[in-house]
Length: 369
Image 1 (cartoon, rainbow, N blue to C red):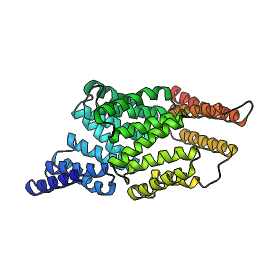
Image 2 (image 1 turned 45 degrees about the vertical axis):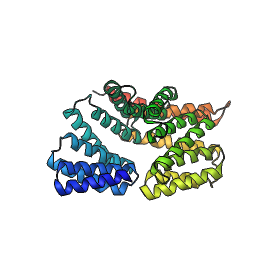
Image 3 (image 1 turned 135 degrees about the vertical axis):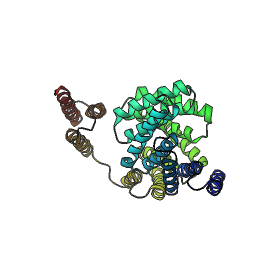
Image 4 (image 1 turned 180 degrees about the horizontal axis):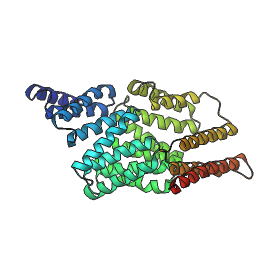
């Protein structure tokens, strides 16, 4: 609350002394908006970020680095609110400005690369996201150093992407490096440390180490409740992921309590139509639903894969190679559950046939003169 008071006071002074359209006033507006977003007050943050951007575009010009900062911050808020369509062009504008004005190796350029990559990953464009994350990491390691917190952020985000792509072996050392940096540089109780703990817990869960994952999820939740508060959206994320694990291992009462809290926080902060709120609500409702049979699970996997392939074949902007790799990862996971002749093997074969359609179509598109 002290930081909020300082930001508010600085804004009032600058508006009175310098005027409402001065670039320094815009900086105060930006700072207050960014702080409100960090505190989880997304609705309160939006008008400050909008106003800062408008002043900077008018007073400094559309290609100024401060304008890029406002574009990047507003895009970050929109992404958090689930408005990926509006966020993407703002991220792309900010990146273009920073590359042109500051240079391709500037830390601010790395920030834009990182943020755009995270959005692309949210949109399941893993190939493009990985390229940008690797560029951002290279810049940060070279310019800021291997122990800088921003380097740790790049390591953590790249590790998270590798997990989504099924590259668990590649993800683990990146998560370990990121966590070690955060704990050493920022401290064991910092929110960024909690973010890294969450990611490493997700990795442990993917390796069936439920006890190890639960310990890290609980540690991350404790940090976020203490530092950010019990009603912060990041606290809701920890509650959600821990609740999902507890449900899977059969502790339904504990899972329900955590998921109910997460839904309540998300509903207040993001609204009922946000994807996080809806997915968390769906998982809460599933606690009381009968468990799907193996046949139902296989049918759902089949339907999802067939729909994704149909969409990719109809839309040339979708990365078919990346989707084929994702389907192959699912096929391997399905195959691992097979014993002898079983529908699992049939499904794995069907998934690989779907993936082959994608790669064959990609080859035809490439060979076309």
